[in-house]
Every structure is written in C-alpha cells, then in structure tokens.
Amino acid sequence: MDLVVRASSAVTAEGVRGLAVCVRDGRIAAIEAADAPVDATATVELAADEVLLPGLVDTHVHVNDPGRSQWEGFDTATRAAAAGGVTTIVDMPLNSLPPTVTREALVVKRAAAHEKVHVDVGFWGGAVPGNLGELPGLHEAGVFGFKCFLLDSGVPEFPPLSHFELADALRVLRERDALMIVHAEDAETIDAAPPSCGRRYQDFLASRPRRAENRAITAVIDLARRTGARVHVLHLSSAEALPLIAQAKEEGLPITAETCPHYLSFAAELIPDGATEYKCCPPIREQANRDALWRGLAEGVIDCVVSDHSPCTPDLKRLETGDFGQAWGGIASLQLGLPAVWTEARTRGHDLTEVVRWMAERPADLAGLRRKGRIEVGADADLCVLAPDARFTVDVRALAHRNPVTPYHGLDLTGVVRRTWLRGVPVTGDHPHGRLLSRGEA
Image 1 (cartoon, rainbow, N blue to C red):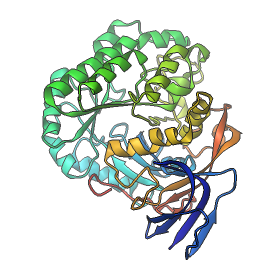
Image 2 (cartoon, rainbow, N blue to C red):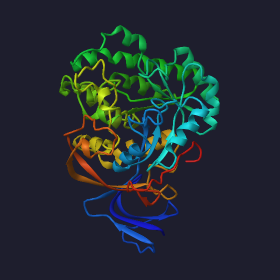
Image 3 (cartoon, rainbow, N blue to C red):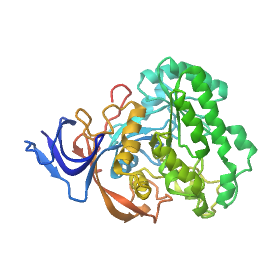
Image 4 (cartoon, rainbow, N blue to C red):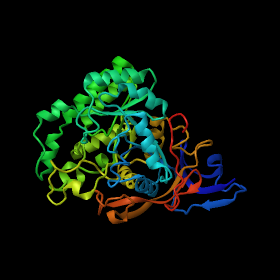
C-alpha cells in the first residue's frame, strides 16, 4: 500500500468504528481492522481525540473566477476548502465573467482553474434566457447539472428564467436525465414586499418574505411533476416550504433540497442592525424557523448541507454604512461549514455519522460523484481528520478565504480539522494537486 491511516474512530456508512484505511494509487484499496498488519510505504496513526471522516463534498461554491477573482479565486477557495475538510467542490456558473452558460465559457472557466486547485473541482452550467440551445453541449462537455434563478441574480450577465423558460429548459434536461438546481424565490412576491434599505436587519428580512420561497418552490414542484425532470432546491431558508417538499417526495417526484450552515447556525433575532456580513438571499430567518430546518434535516426532507460560499470584497458589503439594501448578499463560510454544523448538531443530539451523511455522502450523490464522500473500498482516498471536541474562536484573518469578511468572526466553534488528504496525498496548500472533474468521469 502507498498509505495506511489507522483510526480508533472513523465514520463509515456502517457507523463509527476503528479501522485502517489502506490506500493504493489514490483509491481506498482495503479497509482492515485498526491494528491489522499492513505493508505500506507510509503509515499515519490518528490521536485518541481524532476521528477520521471522508472528505466533505460542497456542491454550492461561488469561486467567481475568472473575471471577479478579487472576490475569491480558485487558489484561495480550494485552500479554504481543504482547511475545512472539504476535498471536492462544484463551482457555480455565475459571478465569474463569462458565466458558464456556453461550452466556450466552460473552456474559459477550466483554463482559469488549471493547476490552481488544491481539491477536486467540478462545474455547474447555467440556464439563462436565450441559451436553451447551449444546454445539450454543456451537458456533453461534463457539467454536473444546470443552475437557474427565478428572480434577479444580482449580476446582469446571469438573468432569471421566466416560468415558461424554466419549463422549456426542464424538458430539454429531462431528455438527458440532467439536474436543474434552482434559486427558488418568487420575483413578483419580492417586488410587492417592502424594499430593503437602511441598517435594520428586520427591514431586510421583511423584503425577502417566506412566501417568496414557498411560492417559487410550489412552482418548481409543479414543473417537476409536469416534465418529469430532476430538480433541486438551493439554500432552503423557509421552513414553511418543508411540507411542500415532503409531499412532493412522497408523491415520488425527483426533487431534493439543501440548506446551509448559516441557516442552521444563526437566528434573525440575534443579528445586529448594520451587520451586513450576515446578508444573504434568501435571508437568515428566526430561531423558530431555524429549529424547524433542523427537524427537516433530521427527517430527511432536506437532503444535504452545503456552504453557498458567496464572498465579495469588503467594500461591497457596505460595512462602513451597514446598509442592507446596498450590500452584496452572500456568506463566506467555505472553511467553516463542518465546525459550524457540528457545533450546533451535537447540542441537538446528532452525531458525526449524520453530519457526514449531510455534508459528504448526500452532496456527492446529488452530483453523481460515485467515488466521493464515503470511506469504502473503491472510493477516492479523500479523507479528513477532525478533533470533534477541540474548540476554537474564529479569526477571519486566519482563514484562507481571499477577503476577511464572515459573520462567523469571533464565534466559538467546536471541531478542529487537523489534516486533509486528497486521493491519499496530504493537502498542504503548497502544491496544488486537485483535478478538474467532469460528469460521468468522477
């Protein structure tokens, strides 16, 4: 073997147990008892306070490269991912210039990432007005699915789909069994809500009401029923939509949903006025809503937890004025997702097996990454070491993200990532050895 990692505690599909993970040529070649004799070039024994996890999979990351790499970039984003135990990300098609809405734009995107990535990286395509004919080519080129908005995305080069345009796109994707991932907020509902302006968080919250999500998700479910296409609800914030999604699943519709660490960690009642680092769309809602999201996650209505890492430069957050109406909406959290979720999960009676299912196995399944997100023979040897009882205070200046802005700054979290391997090779941040993934090859 090239490497053996021995752990007294490791998270597998069968639960937490002691084992030795045996790696050859970047894959898990065997799983043995923790003390089994194995001939290997290198052996690592975890400390008593450490647990071995599969590398996490984050299918919702805005790298913003090329074109807006001052917001993030492939080098810094993937360093941050590895530092947080994430070994695979799937990059969103917008905020980069050009957006990934044509096959040619995908070539530009891959060129921007070439030899810069410290973890494995796949790509979503985009569905926007006028690019219906581009979807088959992007699918053939290996994107993992397609993202659309149902309202203004915040950047002019990625406009939203109308109800009829979404229906047409879903019919095209159904023919290829391709996935559509949807930013589900209803534009008419938000247009009718009070506008967001000023420093009061409650005013911003009122500008993005729950009913906007509920109405959009109802429409997406209806189109999934009519077209048979696979759909995925992004960054679920409104717990009122959980019964809609649960009923659609019971009906057998091909629908999944995700939520994000910030919706599970924060509550609107505790967000200070002017604290625009908390602004995201849809917004962080109240404590009772957060509790309901946790129940939906535990019951399997919500399938996975991913970051929606959407950073920007500090000036775009309007920190000097604290104006929620003017600030960019996005949370930077790629490095912090695991400890943020684990900190809250353990207080609610959840264990690491569940966290790994939400943050590794199910996101991998969503993207069709058959060899990712699990410790099993044949899987890629993507692993991370977590000290689940170790505590730390988030210092934004110590994060690998390009820009020092996050609402987690100063928060005490539990769970320290101490080591990460990508296909059996340590990720140190010095020598990028990540790969660019294509659907069907990963």
